[in-house]
Image (cartoon, one colour):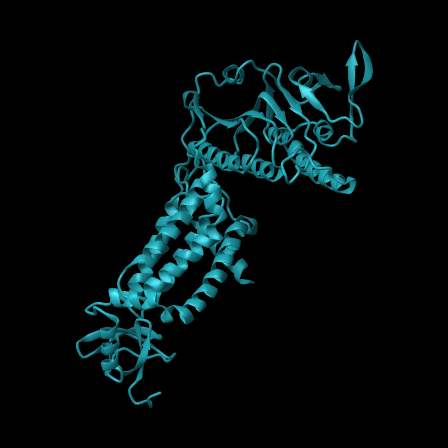
Length: 499
């Protein structure tokens, strides 16, 4: 089992236990008619990455509140296929009833999202379809000419994705494919006055687009609506038609932070690198100063990005802070115990990974519901961690390379010496610091904690942070100072020859 797989198994086990511990043994309370909830999710713009954040937030809020119905209020010219795929996946997490209301138009990717809901209703004079994949020119001037082979490959992939979604929700797959592939065409049988006729709805080399009246016509035997379940003049009329008149309605509104979330998550590996380096420099220099502030701010921004993106709440920032406190206690209070440091490091690692894992909450009516930090799935798959593990891997590699460079270069810079001289307790300038270190060189003292290899030791009235050259030294043993590395004294046990 590789490191990444072992991490996923450990995290899955940890998160699987939480819902069991929090579950309500009495089960969910019965839901009355007055308590029915409808969430309205607007897709009224081009389907682009910021919309993913809005949809994710809306679906999670609907799940947390135990909503009965999720309505996608749609008016879109289409958009990016990768964004469409993410939105389809997110909508699939909602276990209640889902409906798309085509308020005016649902072209291209909008049509794909529509069939990701269980039913489609349309406004008068609205249209849906024209979903053939296209590539825009890099300059933004119109549509690029696609080679035939590439076009067929793209069309095949899109058809497979949408076909699976349409089959899941009970739509006529042939109708959806005719909206994507101009080579398909669409002909269906129709029975009228006892006569069976074949009706051509879309010719070959023609992309299917339907008006609201065309989409709700019935074909076949037994008769079946083509795509739309019906026409509603307004969204309010649709809710009344569906039996949700008087239900609590919640309209999910754009927060304006979606674009900010995209920017933050795009630089999340850089934020982690800055955070790790900032804390490393802070630990290696006396006192608390700018590196620590920058490091903590970078981590805070990282967790805020996950919050804005809708991946997680700010609870994982609290888990990270708890881990950091445990590490600090290990380093400065209970030096050499290791247990606090290991637990703290694991909590920090868990928080960093889970901050970007897209975990969906349990409904408030379910056992253990209303707790947004808990996963709704019995186990998380490798795919759930891909984003986080990639970000973490990049950050660890970048931080390790940066720290190695800093260990060599930072002590030679004026900035480092200024930090040391300004923050060292009882030392007002670099000259005094060097004089004090020269006086301590060769001094003997007693280890105040187990040195494995770091810890604390006392030399006369001075208590110093010390580190061995790799040896393990027991508490109470006598040690001798051989030199200094950053803010730590390098020591060895008395009785060994001086280096």
